[in-house]
Length: 500
Image (cartoon, rainbow, N blue to C red):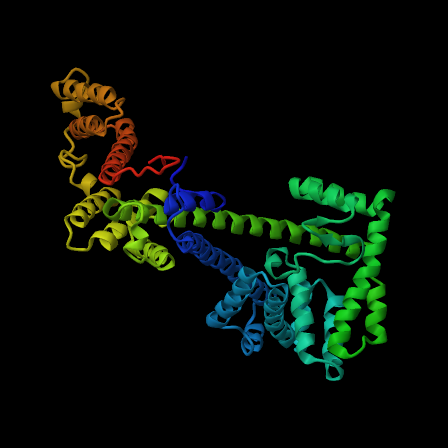
């Protein structure tokens, strides 16, 4: 069993960890462990979603500004441009809503982004010189005219809704901005619920799209345009698309004008197929983003469980299995402190399980035994040695390092010369010692190699030095980690022994 547990195993783990066989310890400790792991994971998930949201907003704004790339555009749009702080706030709101899992909050956060984008877009559309430049961004003159008509009639409706319409138009045409697109819709042929399209033919087409390459997707377009099997999809989507857009426009203008309605109903088959494929692309991006979030959650759960496990080991070594009745620890605060120290360390990797456990063991020992204790001093010494190895100071101090002697004249390394014979002997010694799994022996091989290169520089042997050095460092790191682990007792429970 791995030492880094997933949340699905934490219930049994917590019961054994805190209660033992008799279940004598308070249940609140087990609940605290679960809550701490969930809180830690939620924070990591929130950061991931926030980064996804910030990247999407930034990409959309860059897309707007690149549409013209001239001084007039920058000057005109600059009056409504978002600052980095405002983008961060929008991303934060989106992340908070997603973590809460409240559909209305997610919708509201998405609307904030659409309104902000729409203000920028419509500023460009009101400038005659910029309208053409913005056309490509929104899909052509028809889209420009549609949004312009909405803006012109906004006095009869809601100007903010007009901005939102413009912003959502841009978002809908940018699959990379899928984080701000409704994950599920319940309209017509494209009805999408519980993670898939309700219509089996559409779901099958999407699966081919998601798995396929550009040629596969081109074939799907042809099928949508020509195959009778899929003609109803295009027909129904055209009807629903017109209604969706008319409803959205009505919110901003009180009622779409005749020109707008005519333009909506005149959508070509190609536009409808584009919309279907755009929906596929958006869903594919959403699924990739969701997979990244789920991976973040699983990794975060394992990290927090490892931190709590390290604390449990340290506390049991002093107080026994009922240590929670003798000292009080806020597990959420503890995991947060471990994470903060890892982030600020500069040498340790906050995502490396070995580094996480090393920091958690150090801070657990300090928390349980005190900063002036012998236990903490020993743990600190081992921890500092571990950091030095990772940082490379031990390597820098290695004797006879390559380059520490001046390169000898070519004549000294001629075949058969005493120098060449000695360099070759050292190279053969390197090959023999380097096969060992004992890092001390590997270090001797590394020293022999460095002496060989110092005597007779050789590019091939120099390339071998890095691999041997890595093997030595990894072996030393494992040994130090094992020493640190061995300094703490192995804890048995009444029903199972956690493998250390």
